[in-house]
Amino acid sequence: MLTATLLALAAAALHATWNLLIKTSGDRILASWGQFVFGAMLFIPVVVAIGWPERSAWPFLGASALIHVLYIEGLAKAYQHGEFSLAYPLARGGGAMIAAIGGTLFLHDQLGVWAWIALIVVAIGLGSMVRLSAGRKALGWASATGVVIGIYSTVDAAGSQRSSNGFAYGVALTMCSAVVLSIWCVALGRGPAFLATVRTEWSRYAVAGVALTAAYSLVLVAVRIEGVDAGYVFTLRESSVVLGALAGWLLLKESMGRTRLLSSVVVLAGMIGLVLTKGA
Image (cartoon, helix red, strand yellow):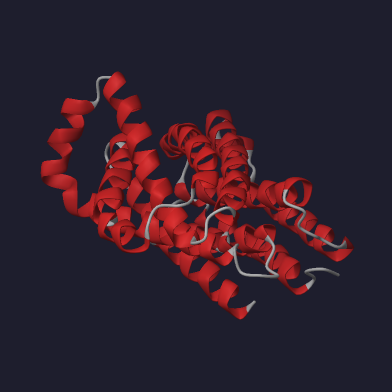
């Protein structure tokens, strides 16, 4: 359990980092595309060394890669219309709740009464972030992104369990997503614009790509540890909501950053409660 906890917390820090890089990019769709492409290329030696996931995991890789197109679109729109200290915690916290529930419904995870109470605390924290003044588009896109996060998290938990190496599954997912995103963006005519940004933004794409791939791969390693529920890992990983709210307040100087930080702390308290009451 300690190993899974440390992996999830490391993933949280990496996850907040690449999302901040996306938020501060000029074109968030191109930046998202770039991080997947660079993450895929930089981790090719890893796949050569540890191998590709087993055939039984392939349908989950394909499904998740397709879902990631919706994820990237939603995330870019959420960051376009909303501040980072709102969009990031709302999307990630909502996604964690749905992943925990999805793990219970589809992956046979066990959450006791107190764990469900902890999830209610998470919901209260998320609800306290919502202000209509933030704009319906910002709230709508962040919430929709949370739903998509919950769906692909459940799919990937099942897929990684069918792979002998969770890290291999995570790296393979980055590669499959890079291919699908490339087809999608080229079809939208974004190819020339992307190539132009690579000349000036390649270092940003590379850092974000490494953080993206490593963060999610660590999570998928954690969910394969015996006795560890997927909902536990995905929920603990979302402790990044506090880091996101803190970054929005201190780094981006967002107006309601401090208030959202407090709401994120409530969300984190619920997540800690989930950890402490696991199986209760």
